[in-house]
Amino acid sequence: EPEVTQTPSHQVTQMGQEVILRCVPISNHLYFYWYRQILGQKVEFLVSFYNNEISEKSEIFDDQFSVERPDGSNFTLKIRSTKLEDSAMYFCASSESPWDTQYFGPGTRLTVL
Amino acid sequence: AQSVTQPDIHITVSEGASLELRCNYSYGATPYLFWYVQSPGQGLQLLLKYFSGDTLVQGIKGFEAEFKRSQSSFNLRKPSVHWSDAAEYFCAVGPYGQNFVFGPGTRLSVLP
Image (tube, rainbow over all chains, first blue to last red; front, top):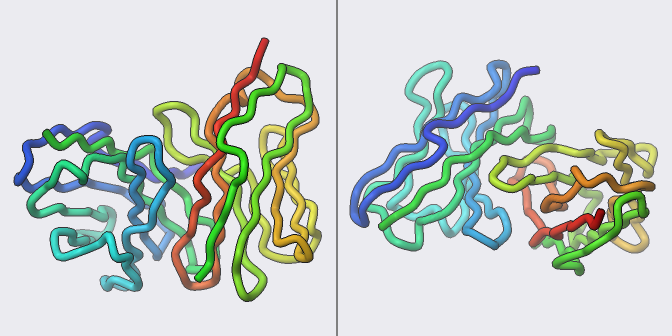
């Protein structure tokens, strides 16, 4: 069964550093998403992406964040200058259409020191 | 704006007992409703979903959920819980064309 994959599984970085989280969505999916989950809290939407454009973003997704589909398979989330409060599990998801089920990857745990 | 509540933060049941996890949503139209499960250190796995039609939906691992429009609820049930069901369960609302909104989650513990 096709699945969403994410790398790395765990990223440790120093405050102020840039990080790039990578995702490979399911191959025939066209809609891509990033969510985050701060430890012990609920899953929060960050951004959705379709046709090489951001479709929607939350208030969390400020200028420090950017997303890109650099090639036909990868979907990345970049945090330009990490803050302590960026420490969280980041989940990528993809779906065939905006009304369809979103399938989630296993997540990348980001730890900012 | 849409929202999802899961009134129970933590539930403990004995193995073999029945289970019901509550989910209430707030949304102006018929929502798309989902239950996801997250095992410790793992990602989110889809258990079941409701888009339209039969209000009782069957999912994986023996779970089912019932959509009750009058109560704005989408409660998850399982007749007999297994120790491997211990996990965090998230209810989510996914209106058409928009992002998912997740509930705060219910942590399920299973006693032997």
